[in-house]
Each structure stands twice: as C-alpha cells, then as structure tokens.
Amino acid sequence: MATDTGSDSFLANRLDRAALPLAVGDLLIIVAFIYVGTLRHGTVPLPPSGAGDVLALLTVAAPFLLGWVVAAPLIGAYSAGAVESAKASVPLAVRSWIPAAVIGLIIRATPIVDGGVAITFAVVMLVVGSVSLGLWRYVAGQFL
Image (tube, rainbow, N blue to C red; front, top):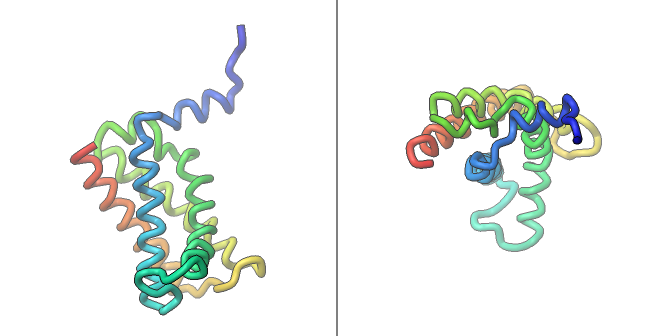
C-alpha cells in the first residue's frame, strides 16, 4: 500500500477537478487584462494582426502567468472551497494574485525580460489584476 507524501496531500487539498473552469477563466482574465494594457500602450494592436503580435502579448503575459501557475495552487485558488461560492473564491483569487504578480514583476525586473518594472506598472498590475480576477470569480460564483 502506497502512502501519500506530505507534498502529495498538500497539493491534493489545493487542487480540485471541479475548479477547472475557474482555472481556465483565471488564465483568460490574466491574459485579457494584460492585453488591454498592451493596447493602451500600443504594444499589440486590436485585433492582433499576426503571430508576432500574439507572441508580443504572450511575452508580456508570460512572467505573470508563470507567477499564477506557481502561486495559485499553493494558496488554494483551485481547492474545493474555491468552487463552493464566490465568497470563498474571490479572496482566494486575490490572495493568489498578489504573490503571482510579485513573481511576475521580479521576472520582469531581470535582464531576461524586456520592459522593466516601473512602480506605477507594479501598482497597476497588483490592483487591476486583483480587481479583474475578483470580478471574474464573483461572476463565476453566480453561474458555476
């Protein structure tokens, strides 16, 4: 009989298959609000006119998506509790976004990624990301 290691049970408690729609929505929301930011700053046109534009968008989004993939499961954004109600889901998303955005900002501050990190950009990412994910999770909680 196999026994669960501490890390298996830790992640098992934080990942629930019923949260898959939330995960897909979260990733789409993150890319969408980053896309709106790139539109505002003229980085990617609307609609993207080719593979280069999509690549530019994904290059901007990648550090934050990586941060989300690391932070969200650890915080419990996809736990059984996240699926129960918006009341549980919204705070989990916001609490997950803060470290995810910090990870993304740290990656952007390295020479590996173009763009850098201005303080206003950091504040916008933290606030707009939190609000966007919170609104999405609230709406999803009404329908999922």
